[in-house]
Length: 362
Ligand code: DGJ
Image (cartoon, rainbow, N blue to C red; front, side, top):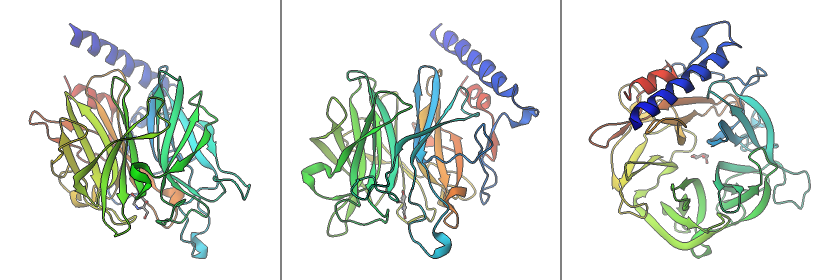
């Protein structure tokens, strides 16, 4: 019965979601995710017709709407040999959608600054931002890998820290709180993500690089207000030299999807599993299958999120980096499949429809 109710609300979602998009579209075949060929850079456009500029971010579902946030990249600089073309002069952009396909630009929710004294002095990086909602404080909290002006990667404090910002509304403005090094104030913070349990316990998961060059994913519990890391932490010791982490939980199992470490060059993803977020974690193989599985289909993972009205339906957001013009990196979104042996996969689909993901669950 519960299943039937869910299936009904699911169909309602598909019907309204797709119809509302169809009203603005002349071609029914555009009602789909278009990832393109594995070597292709497809432009995903917002409702203004502009390229969606929200990189390495995530999705949050608020009051019936999906919000997609990410770093606003710039095209400047690379032609002058600058190495920080992936820096931002803007901050974090936000888009909203009812159907995950049609995205309205909501504006900049965390802005960089022209003030030379500001920790958000432009250009800089707020890499891999993630947002969760704190029910107790009624605030949206954003964490990211903080890289100060001029946005070049480094290991010094101020170039590889955990940054945090907060807002009363998802649409911002987010107030910058500060940046620090979790776990004994030591170890550079590189790629990172957030994970929140149903009971609102939340965790910051990050690539921790030590002065001797060793690096490994670590997890630290956040304080009740989500504004601080705590002394409750663990090293995910099997996840040595892994980047781009994202975590989902299904039927009591945590799945951690990661990339290897090779700068902007695509490499093989690897999944880890555990029944306890603090471990022990076990390697669970490459989640990709078939052509270009060793390059994650020429992408790197960004974030995985649950589609709101369904149970156990997840989408993984990946990004195909374009270092000759970061504004033209392309997005690749794929449905996640978890089989009866609790193996997590995402196979490549040049294009796919939301309802096909749902029907495969029936
Ligand atoms: C790989 C990381 O996953 C990205 O977020 C970015 O930091 C690049 N390395 C920079 O080379």
